[in-house]
Image (cartoon, rainbow, N blue to C red):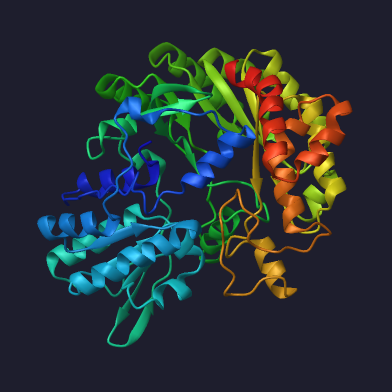
Length: 485
């Protein structure tokens, strides 16, 4: 799908007179994590989709080879990367080649990872600049100064190297989401307009209503970014679009691209006041009339809000459980206050309205034992979500929980991160990596099968030819029904 972060930055600076070329690194065999996708399908988190039907093919040309061709043809004056922690190595490899082939073009890294660890990022020989925080205003100011031949030394949010020193500028004001452009997919291959929702492919548009998050979960990078702005004096981290602006953005996508399903990317969509949601529900149901999926948190669910979501045509709500033990959620994960009773009630309200609901869970978390995993399983068995998402904990840099692990000696600055389907970092708990991986493999089935089959699933935690066959048969019986629904 078209990435909302790059799309907003691209549109924002284009509207103000600058030219942009997007290099699409999707579907290159040497950067894709196909094993991760296959694992999610295998354990029942995702349904399998044949993307070749929409024109998608795995590209066998090395990604850097095509990238070099695009740069040589376009001749940009600045090259930017949006970098997450798990894509750092890919961005490293691509940036190294750029500095070798085009040493005169500055390389700018932005996104979550450089924002969290700007010191480590700017120290890389192949990175000339780092954007700390939101990119729209920062990139516009940088490009405008470069275009005018002015010094870029005092550009808010931008760190850069100059004459052997590093200039570290503070972050500037947060953007008003109403200033953002409507999404525009023209820079992307047409197949990026398609996306899967519960095994069905739609003309899918990613849109955002708010920015920021009111919570400070210990495993999430958002709380660290919020702190960066707060210490600089910018307190209003959570911001909203006007309902009419959001609806106009959706209408434009329907009109221009035939979008027939929306994915609202906000992590906490329903944190808006009731009056705002009521206005939004009226406008959306009258003018857009397309199904959508959103993410929110249990404390934001009320009977009235669920009714308004239903009025808008909401297809599915995604909410995080993460761990089934209330005390653990509060003390270790710093999750927003919510009892298991409230979780059960919230999921029940959504399901009874006829809206699908999915639950997000994490295992392999520090100080969580096998009993803790089964408390999470038991809570999922109680709420019976339509889809159960599962991740293995990744100690992302700059997060509160990783900092605690760092202080207590469980990780160090050189710890390499994997993805959320692999146990790559040893965390303090009484389970081995193999046991965590076994529980990851069987978690969704533990949430669905009769308890009499638990001993059989316990055996299936060990991966071999026989248990793989048993797992596949159990999946056909207990998970396929969920996918079909």
